[in-house]
Image (tube, rainbow, N blue to C red; front, side):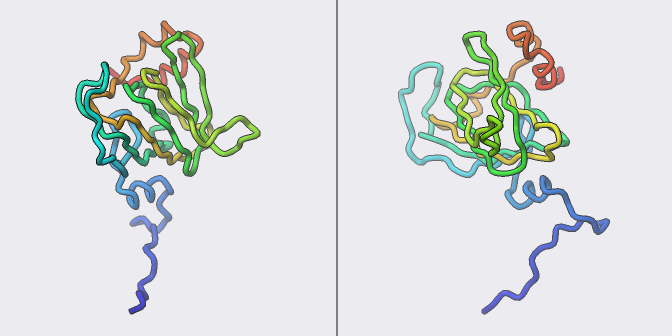
Amino acid sequence: MVNRRRPVSWQSRRGGRLDRAQELIDRLGLAPHPERGYYVETYRASLKIDGLPAPFTCPHAAATAIYFLVTRAQPTTYLHRLVSDEIFHFYEGGPLDVLLLGQSGAGEVRRLGTHLAAGERPQIVIPAGTWFAAELAEGASHCLIGCTVAPGFEFADFDLAAGPELSARYPAHAARIARMTRPV
């Protein structure tokens, strides 16, 4: 039997087109994330790893993956760090600037996107223990990315920064850190 229904139109009650970010939230089933933005877990490995060294405190899935969306309504995420490595994968929108504040005291901004000649990269690796946050580039309406974490993500491993202590350690990035600090 052929489905003859028309595709869902993304019309608001006022008759205008919903923005792409809202369409992604609805179609992918994204929910608000504590660091800001929206996410949904898409993969959690069935293989569990036990006996991981500190700072891991419990068994973890071998890997996890999520969709993550940053929108113009909340153009930055909050500074945070994980005890696992994380890889960002670019899907659409953007570009997205990712601030990385390394344990050595060095900070840098990497751009996630597909304009390779301009220095953008479609993947960015965030080493375990690195403070980081993301910010939409000027003019971008949204950015949809994938995040892969190995060993897998657990909220117990997620640490949000207060912010001011990082401004003192990384003064060259103080203005960006202020935009990426959660309100008290």
